[in-house]
Image (tube, rainbow, N blue to C red; front, side, top):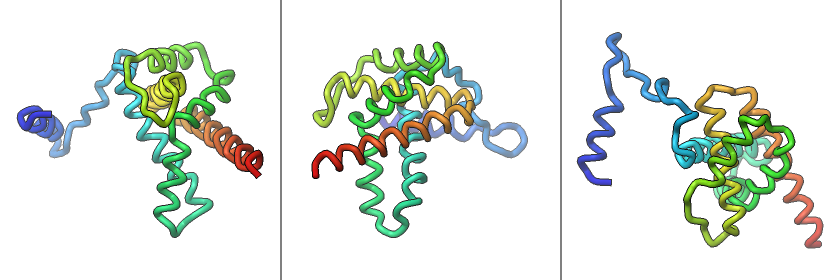
Length: 162
């Protein structure tokens, strides 16, 4: 990003709303027309925050443990498992958003297969879409179910290694 581009973005962020406040820019965003990678960007941030809040139930003092555990949960491998677990709960609209995200052109990291990475991108796009559509109850329902699926799968994996 060039300095000029950054300056333009910062200038756009602080537009007076006419009442002495700052105009909310994303209110005019149509999630249905957004690039699915932008939806995934928002969904990734939401799921990170959801997971971090959720694991506070288990650990309140060790930041490094919180970070490592949350990073593992939100990895492409586990998000792929979460999606497969919630797929049957989804509406046709939600499945279509997932597919847009899954099929978006992106590059997979070494920590997951290409299929897992694309699936996790679709999962994140779905969460981002629901967030921007302000469907909070549905978003929470799917995030909570995903967290439960991931937690159970992690426990199963640990039990199988013993």
